[in-house]
Image 1 (cartoon, one colour):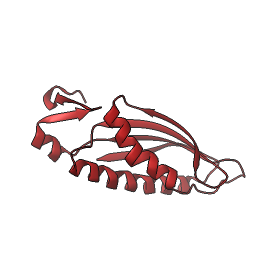
Image 2 (cartoon, helix red, strand yellow):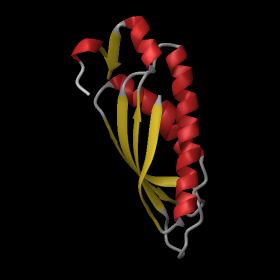
Image 3 (spheres, helix red, strand yellow):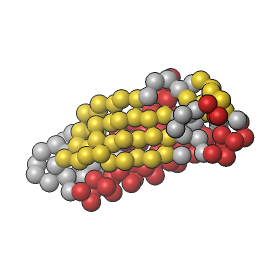
Image 4 (tube, one colour):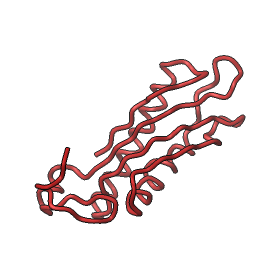
Length: 132
């Protein structure tokens, strides 16, 4: 249902940045599954740049989302809330650590096959007319 990719990290060890990304991916997947069960998961994508504050949490965020109110709702619940709750890895050089993440999510194929539609950004489209 979801893919979380580490695009870049700064001022932190690579293995810690990857572990952070994996923990976030687990949280996003769990939340996406919950939304899909309720029929509320839509196709979505986000790019996030997160900067750690002195307390080790994401205090600076730059978020870009695919259009649509349902996409924003999915992102708030499944991506931004867990991201803000995760502790950032310690900085390697005393400067604020940061990550850039690329995230996509969508209902599973089984859900799409049952409905015959693809939901994107709060609107439905025929699954057969959707471009890759």
